[in-house]
Length: 155
Image (tube, rainbow, N blue to C red; front, side, top):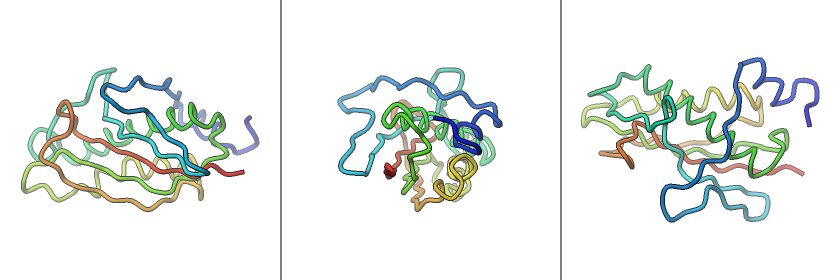
């Protein structure tokens, strides 16, 4: 599975261990594959195993939100690995980020960089993606960040 300079080599170099597939907390599945596209359900930011609660621009600053989005990226990669079995066969296509934001907070794009930058670091060219970042009044369970992802499974 691991080839020189593989996704797994980069994860190991960063000291990242992928989590197991999380059990959904509502009426949905963690991912759906159609053809070569893989759609991952939204993943909530977690800290110390619990939902990372807070509102950006009120309870949390941009740097903390960026760290939370990075944690989401790790969980998303865990789901990708469970779905595909080999992250070297994955290209990240699109992210959608929902940032729990105070009304005057406008740095959702900077928060989302925490996820985008890690995916690009781990997947290289295959990790560069399109994305959207939105400020929302609230996320499920008060999570500070929720991100979903679309990936292509390469032959």
